[in-house]
Image (cartoon, rainbow, N blue to C red; front, side):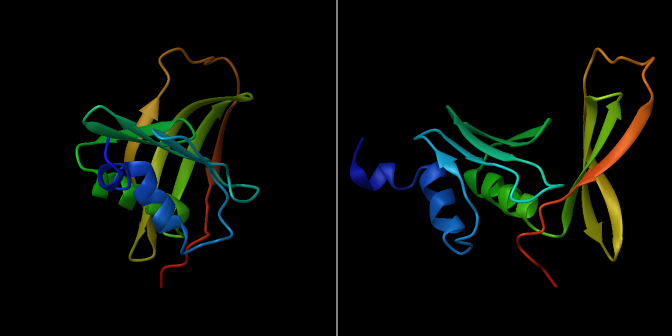
Length: 137
């Protein structure tokens, strides 16, 4: 692989984009970048390059993209104060994750991921996790 091609990979582009926020720590391999939860009450973010698709994961929530630009934008959204993750728990087990985006001052649910096997007998609890590293006015 040529040097010019290697520098345009998803992980390389994500690393360049993250230089705008030097306080954000991450771990990177050639095909994967992982950002641990930047603060208590936040969620981890993972970016992964799969053949000709791109995966973004916020804890248990995940979405694949055809374009790397969309995956990078999603990663940046996950770090902003415009996004939060609603986590449904049964006891101490996380069973569902809903991505919520703030639109006109209200939290609007977008995409929900659920586990197939759920300990339904345990008490239900909702948590909201947010990484407000990037402020968008």
